[in-house]
Length: 149
Image (tube, rainbow, N blue to C red):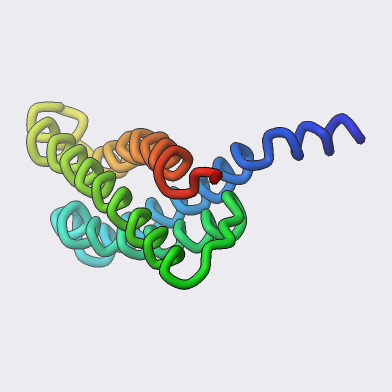
């Protein structure tokens, strides 16, 4: 039991990021699927994806600040931290949007499977995009936003 506690203590930040990053990714996929079911793939892949990302950015900032990196910044420093976080997440949101566009609008019509089940194809593209986004977000968070002083 002590070995497990030592392992968790040693790798807490990475484990916590994986857990809360996984929750943020799950939230992202659920909201995307809900938009897709309610308004169609075109909406979900466009404005829905942007709205989806905004919701997830706010959730991710709170969980990263509170549970993962345990930031103690206050006042102007917390505003700077939030600004950096949002800036980096906007960059990965653009990356997500480009991957979604390429996968659904450009590659989708060429791939025969996508025409057989376009909603499943779109969800697969979204999942692929989220893998790239979560790794990029960790690098930004660790190296730029919540770096130890």
